[in-house]
Length: 137
Image (tube, one colour):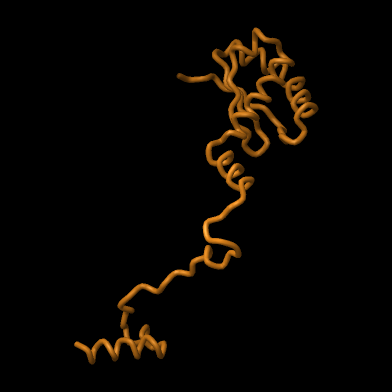
């Protein structure tokens, strides 16, 4: 058995193992990127930890949703705004969910005004369009 193992190691070392159909006995070690960082292992700044937490938990999206809802309610009024739920922005399209089709129709009539108001008050949001859908429960 020792001789076979030596031949196996030699074929791998010479790079001819694939030609002989010999597979390596052990998996090659993966390169650990964490070991190349400078500083003590595992130490991170508070700012990076907070930003990771915000992105993982979606707190930024929750805050943006609240801002969108305030802007829309300012444009259409509180009565109509109570019947909507703001969704996510995907590729510049804001999803707004309404409780019924009558509310969607009213929002559609005011869509241009709502979109202008969002673009004025929240220019960094980069909203180009709004899509209205009925909220299913």
